[in-house]
Amino acid sequence: MKFGGTSVADAERLRRAAQRIVAKREAGNRVVAVLSARGRTTDFLIAEAQEISPNPDPREMDMLLSTGERQSCALCAMAINDLGHRAISLTGSQAGIVTDTSHTKARIVEVRADRIHDALDEDSIVLVAGFQGVSTTKDVTTLGRGGSDTTAVALAAAIGADICEIYTDVAGVFSADPRIVPGARKLPVVSFEEMLEMSASGAGVLQLRSVEYARNHGVRIHCRSSFEDGPGTVVVGEEETVEQPLITAVTHSTEEARVTLKGVPDTPGAAGRIATVLAEGNVNIDMIIQNEPVTEGDRADMSFTVPRSDLGDARAALAPLAAELGIEVHTDEAMGKVSIVGAGMRSHPGVAAKVFSTLGDEEINIEMISTSPIKISCVIAGDRVPGAVQALHAAFALSGSETIQAEKPFGRFT
Ligand code: ADP
Ligand code: ASP
Ligand code: MG
Image (cartoon, rainbow, N blue to C red; front, side):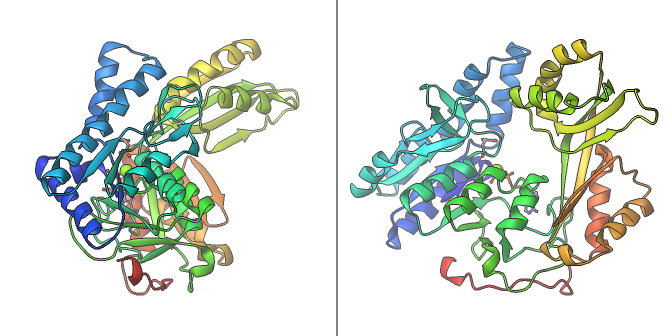
């Protein structure tokens, strides 16, 4: 069971999470629960660091950020003890979550779950601080924003859990962020393939890495509400879906930045060198466009998007190469992205045309486009994102019963 930040934000909610955990235990299950930092604790810790230092050392950042989830776990253990059950809280490191050494966005390389097994064998409920681990060089690391989802999935895989329940502040995965489209539809099931595209394009309800990890390790995810009972969304293998909807969801992100490189030498190897310095700087590049020069021998322009939080790293990584090659670097911080995802679009022409005309009708300018077989993404101005999401959700009639849905039993997990 994993509880997100809103689900443990105040004393009453934290006690309610404790009660849910205890109820699972009393129903005869052995329970490991992963908790996130309370409310906006992680945001506050980041702001605190920035107040002290404009460019905080990543190792120290991880020491700081990892404290948020430890608080939640210790407090929840107290609440569970008061309910008459034994609970033990563990840091990511104590829980055996071993990561690589990339501070603030570390990847889990191994889970050594023996301490968890021992505690379960002693009949304890085990509470693990989400979003963190210990690196192969013994430093505390964090797993990137939203990383507690990945902690939960990795632990579920390591202990062979029956199910990984992600309890959050919405009732499951919806056809769009319900905060932007109040009429969005809850999806009873969603395939890994679609969920990966959704998470990658901004549906933060499940962190992308948690979905990748679940697919690679065969973990069953059930994403559901912390506040009400009833089934949420089960993420299933493609082979388990019966029908494929044309479009499953509209996703968005307002956290994009664009980098434009003017005057890139039009020679083989230039793009490779640019991508290499960015990769070495641990910057995730998303969409890339290169304009070939009209006249031979001229220089090219290249634009790409990065998460806004990576922009500082991108600038730093590019600076030496830009100086060497005489490239001008321009950045635009206020970009957004809207995407539609659906396994059914693979075999249906005309979807892109409908997306572009819908945005055109709203007078929204498309600045960059990228596609995969089951996704179309458009980069647009950040402030136009909510309107774009609503227009696309309406254009593809995603609220209504006319959407063809994959139906699969999931009652066993509810
Ligand atoms: P938690 O703190 O529980 O991890 P998050 O804030 O990380 O919660 O994720 C839940 C939020 O994800 C919701 O409150 C919702 O606003 C947002 N969200 C974005 N896209 C979707 C979507 N397609 N379906 C459901 N929620 C979404
Ligand atoms: N507390 C971390 C964050 O806010 C991790 C998480 O909530 O999953 O990103
Ligand atoms: Mg989250």
